[in-house]
Image 1 (cartoon, rainbow, N blue to C red):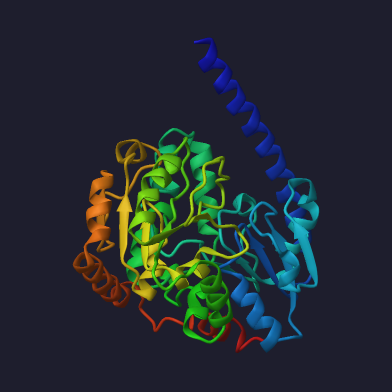
Image 2: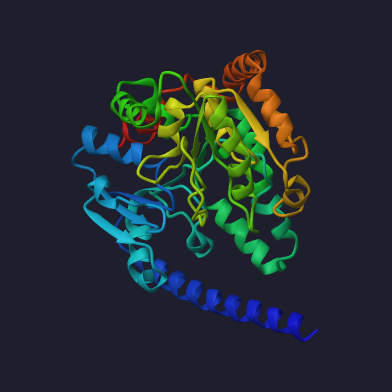
Length: 392
């Protein structure tokens, strides 16, 4: 009982701090809303990779548009590459500047949950756009996650206020919108089926130099490449065990690339030839350019890699645990047309079958026509045309 009481006390203290912070943010936001709206585009990002194409398009197509960046330094490694007029690492102690930029910027692009939105209604004459960091989901999140069942009603209401103030929500298509409606308590009308900006470069010459560099580093004539990309877990996962299991494939002509989730830092010390823990120098979408087979679990990656027709399998030895925290969609592995297994023998048998790999490739190629409403490769231009063509 003493431990439970201490845990609850800790929660109450943290919530009190959050409430004080949001009160201060609200006061200054309201004050700054008295100032004129400026022709500024504000990028407020956690990961940034789905928002940066918008920044780059404005940089080249609308050079007079002022662009400011607020970013999470844990995940955005090269903020200077955005070439924005202002670059501001996110810190709550900077809440006055954050409130000012949010209140006075005409366009605001985000890619994650922004708690400050709960006390910052969308100002008239401004536009907010949510470029979510996933193109679909296999896991429960937001209001449908297991965590949402244990938080207090006031906290749950705060979550809902944030979601209601996202503005337009960009998705690949209507099916994704239907997935995201319940977790965010949003109507279908707020979703715009413009596509996924970070995948655009797969469909133009931009990717060629990156692909050549990665092929030079990892590709060999007599070997195929398997990318293992597990998702985030709120508990100690089984990534190390899975890598050790995958190592046996190196004797069957496979090179194993391991791309951990950005929130996970590997502590693995074992090494073997043809097994590579890849760095954050390149994104997951870069490595997919040279991938022959994708092994993941509850990740949203296949909702994008389907555009490349990559054979995919979901290996989920901790399925029962993950089903509890944070939870997975009831139809798992649907809507993805992929095989899911809790046994590594199932992975081996699937990878050893050229027929299974070819069937998976065809299924993913067909799935992309269902998941993406508009032609892939033009998401950035659609977004720019929609929000800027008539205003700049």
